[in-house]
Length: 393
Image (tube, rainbow, N blue to C red; front, side):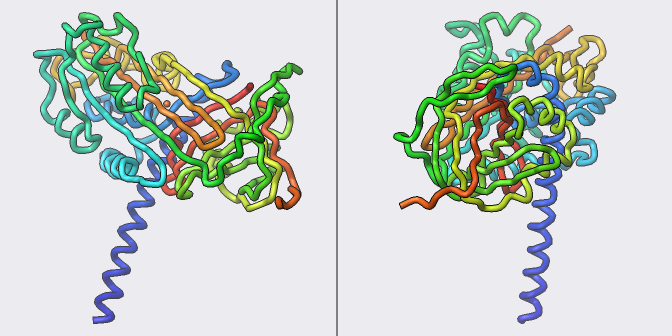
């Protein structure tokens, strides 16, 4: 009996390990995609936030209906080719995990809105429901406020009104036959909140010698820190309650070091290293209190990254969705993040439009984020980067 028990435990252990390996492979693909996307959308902006998870999962869901060269380009750009069809089952498991965590408030949702009487392949509806828990509903062409309003209401509801009016009036036209929507909402309390009375106005050094006054949250505490002398960047982890999710701040040592850091992000292995090798050090911690909102049209960045035929009306192959000739007409993304003393609230939505022809001890060191930095809101268990951004004051 003892031998049988040991065998069962070993087998279960292998299954759990294999499942985690799949999640790590998916997070690696999503992170690789995110860093390439960062190079297209963030370099010319002083501050930005987006959700790698939202964009990547929405496009991967859409790829269920892609065929031929269209599918190949999407899978290569999303870095999911090596995962094969199992990528959708892995996302299913991730979505179930995300929607069941308890220490933070974290929810994700998918939906597909279809033009009335437009015929789509039943298997596409079944698969998006099975793997992505996607609701399917008709676009209400006669809705008060326009056909965009019910979809904007869906997004607002799923993000607790943080993401509003992602679709401007007139977005849905006579050629629009389908909209694929993803939302994500995060509300986490710091494991060690900042004291509000210690938040003060301080100088934040910007590029080219400019200085701006920002609200800085201050604390003296033990923090997981990494001092990377080779890449000239310091990393601090700010965990949320429960420890599974953390915000990582990657702070260049030089005031104008953000450009070198952004070049570092192109290398996938370098990004992974940002989250490893941290150790607990007592520091004087100063972090800006900020709110960033970003709206992105991703058509051009995605084309530049390799998804081309999907956007060409007479070349796209989405025969797994419909027998009609359709193409991706727009990919819209909106994200908001607010970092404050008690924790962080962040939300994002991605819409893919298919059309016809995101007594204290004295500190021994300091981590003062008083110049431009990159940050990541990350799931430490699966490695998924839920939100990524840059703050430059």
